[in-house]
Image (cartoon, rainbow, N blue to C red; front, side, top):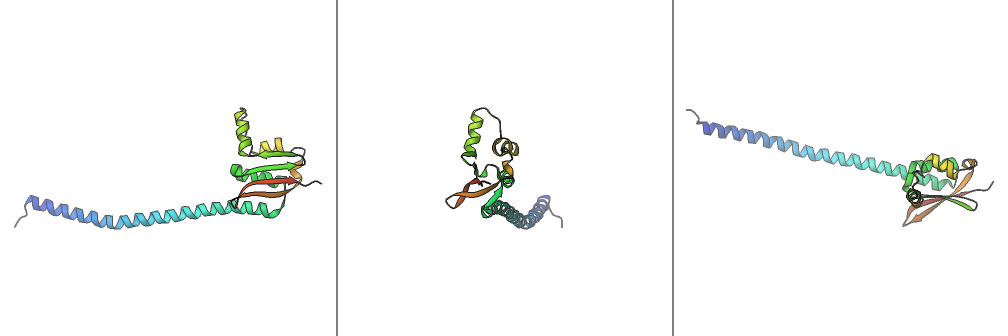
Length: 153
């Protein structure tokens, strides 16, 4: 008893469909599991980065007194995340987004959060070795700026 070619084709199509159904039954749950693992890993990485940033800020605020070197290092790590004000007697040196915009609008191509700028425009005459009192400026329970007051020797 022979099978007709259309019956054999139908059986082959059924077997192929069954094989693909089994593959999809295995692959789809694996894809969802892989996506879940990826999202969990990214979430952990993001939380770790946020905790590092918060730890630096927390340490700066808790120290109370820092050196100019500490300030430069903190600014280099955090870039434009905060506004910074270095206050030496009657002179205030803003390192802020508004200051950067002003310099840019004047046609000056300078990064105020760079070590070169800080050394040439803020920490003059070896004031980088002086001590500074740290005051954080908070809004809605979040630190938005830091003020560094130079302690007179």
